[in-house]
Image (cartoon, rainbow, N blue to C red; front, side, top):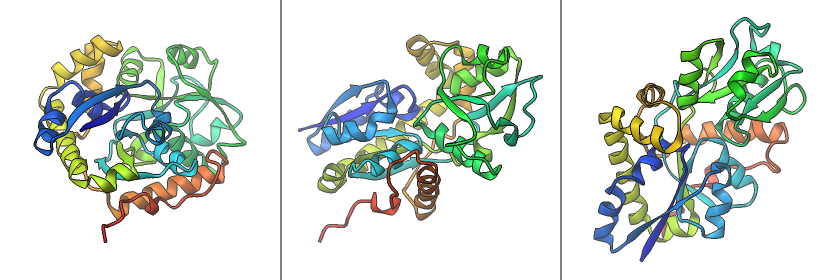
Length: 288
């Protein structure tokens, strides 16, 4: 039999796992082969799972909440440790924005539908503002740093190597670290039928995820060279970004489900997801 794993560049654990032999080694004793399904938009992970494009995937905090709200039957399988240094909300160094309330009426570049939406919606709520009414969200891109510096946009949520590059080249100021607002975990989830039918496969994959994390933590320079050559950016910026990650996989806990429930409630409250969800429903049912 074959297990198909979805992988995209914004999930570092799965990204490196796909370049190592750990998943194959973990699943071989169970009689399973591994196939990698490479795709670019992590926001579509829930839909791709439901469509059968792959069996197991990973994103940040928002896509699984959106997946539940859209009716996709997913199961949380594991999470990363909190990633407080993974991303940040940036503003122009000499610009007028000094606190989150100053974002009102402005345009914010971000990865819409990613964990960045969760971060921005929660930060705005804390400041008495609404994601739906008080800012204009727009997709971030390769020009976001330039547009921020020249005043064309009000703020930008950056992550990983792009964040390291923006800080290295200057002209920006950190308004919020992601860890100031959310735990910003990687989240690994699967289709319910797969997770409940083959729990031993899920357990083996979680072990492989931790092995991939252990490798990345022990080889940051090599990991940075791989990412720079494949995705772009400089080795220096990638190494800075990768060294900021915790590289630890944790079990799905009540505390994590509460974090996700808070995210779901905020996102539903501003109309970002179409219906309310109960995140505790996205766990595997015990066999009877």
